[in-house]
Length: 421
Image: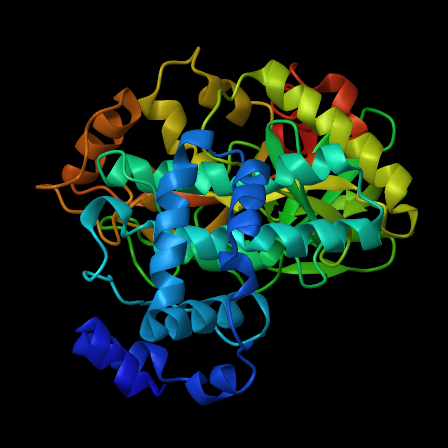
């Protein structure tokens, strides 16, 4: 079937342009007969590995059968699967709503496609010689993503398209695993700072990479300027061979317009762009206690050092809304998120928004419809409604500082070269 024919059957003309790209290419390699991920045995097995409830089998199998019996739905399911898991084409951003499937089962169409990652993940992890325990933990990201959909759809199961397309990152050449509470993506460091450590005291300083436009308050606003936050300075970074000069970034997450010099006889370069790091992602659901995070970090450090010795990571890193120092202003000081922030070395990134998708699960923040069921939603709702912007931030934590996790090692060791300024 052509894309036009499929859209006519589905009855969503406005989605034609979304699925036309590469449609013919996908149809040319579509398997004959029943799609493998819609077979009954595959659906049940994938559901089990995904961590979803056994009680879902009846509805999942019903929708799988409905798709298989409808040529238009079958072609659309293959197209989405093929775009997400078998090609390097750009992400799908919009897909049909599928009003032809009943309300309570509609989201299962895309959940079935998401679950189809499981056999690919299992095969890929066998090639990498990843223990089955870790493969099972990683596959449970499907359960976490489904949980986000449920919170936004009155308990009905499914997947948002932006999270469905994210699943391609767990396969296709990436090393992206869940170990305990957190997920880790082994990749080169891409942050905007270079980090030095004093070889005697252990004090650490992050210096801004050259050419970054900082605001007067020490942040990177990106394309959106915060009202009242005036332009500040452009960072510079240079080395003479005996010393390095640059603009420091405090572990609280903001830069200083104070150029400093670090003698290289005293300061060692410990993290730079391109070094191997474990980029952290936080699955939804579950607590964020320091104990759970510490356990996961320690397990991950040991595993990656042993399993991938040719790509030894030197730091944990991440960039997310959850690492914003604004949380320290808005949440109680004894909250898990605040405690976690105070363990990390934060640094600015040019990410500023009026919406926090993972909190409100909305494409754009709507004060009328934004949910306020949790204490976090209520606090952040009030903050955004009051005409504030949300700053996502980067973070880092060196692997060899793990014995100090829980003691705010970066904030309690601010180098005197900064304090004296």
